[in-house]
Length: 285
Image (cartoon, rainbow, N blue to C red):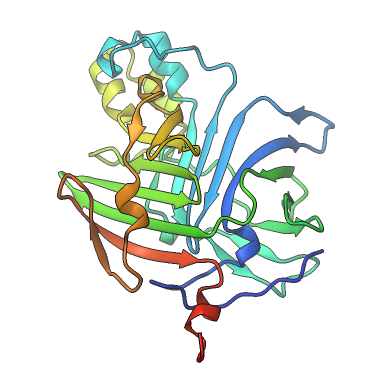
């Protein structure tokens, strides 16, 4: 297993996870004790120096990219969207846990969740291969094992940003050339039940169902030919293919507590991390 180091200070804010965890991970598979394996659900774990965004979209979700927003969705479409599972939170890490280092996500540090209930409430023992490109996550109870693959080797930049307004919380997580944008629904859900069960209980009140589904998680990626991110996967499928402006993100100054986007919105900088930041600040550099 790779050596684990955990420092606290970053260019802005405090790092709560080791550098080996920072990056964008795509789940290759999840295995269960009964021998079943899921390789089809699309799962993205984007980890910054502290903040995390996680998206889980079923492979059986219908193609709704042609819809013109939630108002254009039929009841069956809405129920399919209610099966999605995403969250934005903070990852904490115990490097001396046994038998493996432990990652955990205290609900008290959640920023927003798509589902009112937590589908995977356990912490995870983590283990990396020799070059850090594959990470195994083991549930301490033995309920599952997840195989994660790093999408970009050694990203040199990670930031998580938060802003609030109009009754909603917006989050933006970036590591290297990968990003997740998240927005909460404007009215919280008090019922501790699966979203699809709540939606079904609302019968044919489609406006009420649409309201509880008005929560966005969008995964986006940029390549060498683009200055902006392109959304590839979203809880609101009609957003897929749209752009997210990124130039301003990479220009955020170290130690900045706040940053403004091109539209004038002000974001709080929770953490801004750059690889080898500590070495650059060392005397003589």
